[in-house]
Amino acid sequence: MTENEKKLPFVAQSVPFLIGCLIFGPIGLVILLFMWRRLERDERINYLIVSIFFTLLEALDYFTDGIIYYFV
Image (cartoon, rainbow, N blue to C red; front, side):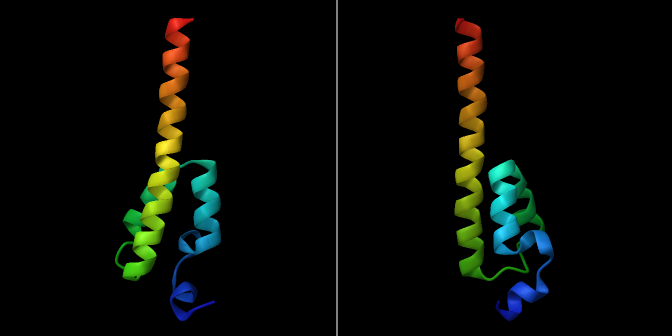
């Protein structure tokens, strides 16, 4: 565990962040928004990629359910 991870709140550490993104994708973007200045540049990029990926998966799920619902 690095010094920076010790300073971060629990939800901004890597494992709780990934679990939060798995449960609800956009929550990662919200956490990232609030913790932007505390994170180092490399961590920001990694967290941003992960949170955008899970948010897109979540949005795709909503769009496909909506389209199938209206055609059936």
